[in-house]
Length: 81
Image (tube, rainbow, N blue to C red; front, side, top):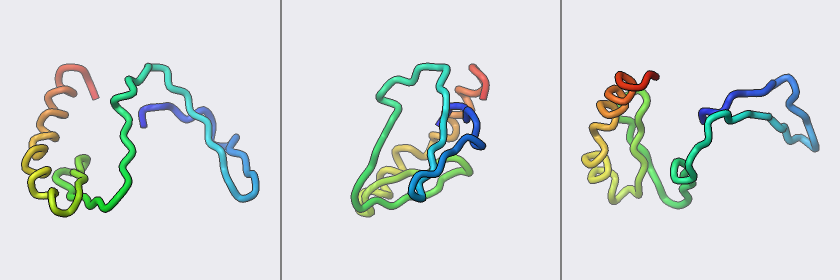
């Protein structure tokens, strides 16, 4: 998540639950959020890229997204980390 931690020392405890506060100064489009539920497995293809899919489709998904690290490096070169 790209949000900044407001202050973890302010995390409150309520019946064993902790609350953390973050601030997001740059708006994030809704399409950048994903929630996955089900039988999924992951395969790490670089230090910061893991491909997630159903087991039966994992090899095909890895093939489709294998160059993601290269795309990230190109974007960082153009716009910064």
